[in-house]
Image (cartoon, rainbow, N blue to C red; front, side, top):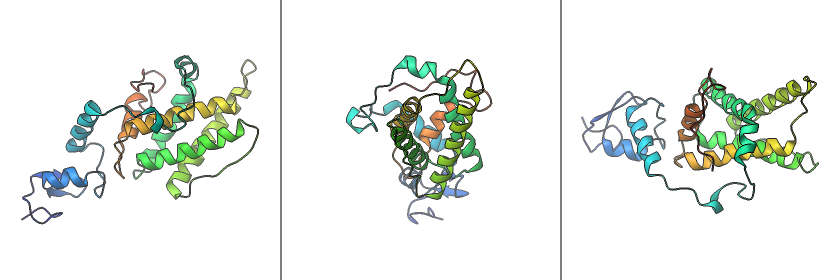
Length: 212
């Protein structure tokens, strides 16, 4: 029997997403495009490893909000909030397996824009149109509101400035731009979050994400 996708080449690789063998060419061509690959697929893992080893740095002019200066000491100072944001995204993915890099980035970007305008004294909110991105946007917004309430409940702490939260969201957005492979169903960015912020141990594990 030929490959069920191209119907020409012999199937040699088992595809866990389709539950049958497909040919290596279709595996490489349709991976994360028309095939919604599970994260533990060995062919996907190998492909992501190869991409990471050969990925070219994203040009500065292609980074979102490239004019925002992100200092290492600022990121370390607010690592608890950054960890919380990453963990919220990962926990959302656990409940929504279809979440991918593109959708996650859309939610982060929309929330970053909300906080950018709040930092100027203007309230402007435009959640993403896509339902899944809008849901993640809402989860992140709820986490940030709870985080600010928790800080306000402590006499020694003050609420973070909207501009500070904006910068942390920009950091995540720039990481998403650097880590994703551009395929429509890519989860390479989400996988990098999982490596840098393991669930249940996020506050204890050092991150392996590279600061842009």
